[in-house]
Length: 205
Image (cartoon, rainbow, N blue to C red; front, side):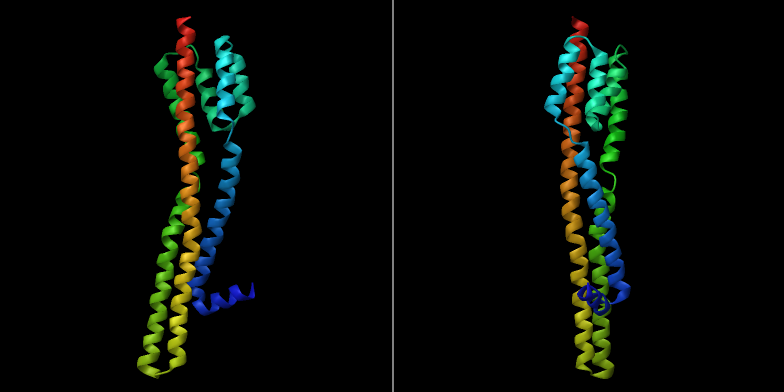
């Protein structure tokens, strides 16, 4: 902890404190998204197998109960479609599309913030680099003080490192969570198609 405070002082409080705040905000969102997406994950294959079995028996109520048991975004979206069973196909699809948009927005919550931090942190670090070099050149021009020159260069390097240390984990987390959300989207599309196919099969029978 003492080392961190030392680096904050050496890098300049005006630069390092904002970077620290951004890092803590990003870390909080990473932890929250990790648990939220983990909670939203279900065994999609098992879920769809049970939904198909219920609909083959034309037991829509049982299918709704299965959705309530599994929960999660995929189950919630299919539940909205099941609740509209008997309505025109286009209306069911529109209802599920609206539900999907809502669920995807919930899955993506916080990701724009991680993206913003990953882009903003290096810029703030670079600003510290510029101010550090200004201190160095000012000391060189006016004071001819090697100690001040070294201090300015040290500040420049510390803020650059601080910006990268803040940015890299946020960028990695953003890429990881984006991949997971895209996986959810593909499963939602697949599950919706299965439901509409099951409805068509029920109508043909």
